[in-house]
Length: 481
Image (cartoon, rainbow, N blue to C red; front, side, top):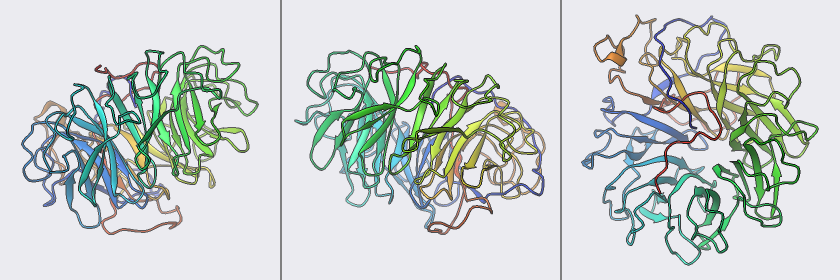
């Protein structure tokens, strides 16, 4: 997600006994358990929660990390091993920064972006590209190419990979990836790594290119459907709201539909974005500042919604368990489970669960079947985080949620004193002593059914999000050419 920098608020407190509690552990640690020596962020969780990909500037997560750059890693939560992803097929480390990973269902493939020129031969475009690492074969390939394997002439970012690792969706300002790209803006593309072909996604149902930028792709399990956000007004008929919207492209049916509408197909009266699509492409979670997508939306804040493209209904996710209280502050950055039942998101609201007194962003999970909302960013005794938590990634079965956090007490077993870690001279506690953003993984709350595999070492991953905050559509991180 993107947005303004969040100021962490120092707090402490214990959730009421009735609150569901997760098993929480740090992901961004060295194999021997040592704290990472720098920030870690942007987790991506495999289908069963066993593997977690993340980015980190730490140098002590693997041996031989001497490049002084942000790298991508994968931790096996069962064995505790950590491997570096952002290396070449000959294990040469990247000569520039890598980040924003997305892991395949089984944890074998990891898509990521990198400005490194040393990951593949012939990388001469001097910009950020998309790569995929095969952790079984030990190979790294570049994704942001045209169908003749020619590299893009401008930057590519924010990859999303299909369940089997075959298809990769990404955004790019390159004009050379497909023929007829003349709009000089960011578009969404999908690369088929088996066929070696690249197609453009951000077009209308007649293949007309978008007339404004498109970002943040999310691809379905089989690679058929791609959700994305766009400021374009010509992707569907009747787009007159003048705001960012969320769309889904069906690459088989070659159709494009708008997602950010109410149950009567009325367009939103404010911006929508940051889509997350279910495995079969039926459900799409997204954030929106619109007030007219559901009845009774009076909080004047960003909320999380889910659109069912089969029943053409839209529901709000960022509400309490009684569905009576709407969030009293912004909720952003959704991540949806494979079947669309569970949605993880971050929120600054204090009224989604009882006992939320920390005054900062937390991570929550909404069960749309049971209509319950639980807070995930707590430690194993239910103590709330003393700094903000962001950027959730939910496992396919909804049982695990990875996230990033600056909190120092998520592995603490007692209610800690106020912490001054941000100033660099305050007390720290338990085993989180690095005063950096970390990645955590949380096991499912007690009321969630055991619907999937339960790998050893169930943990909560918290990751650093230096740019987290209230999402304002259209405000994007700085992009290089």
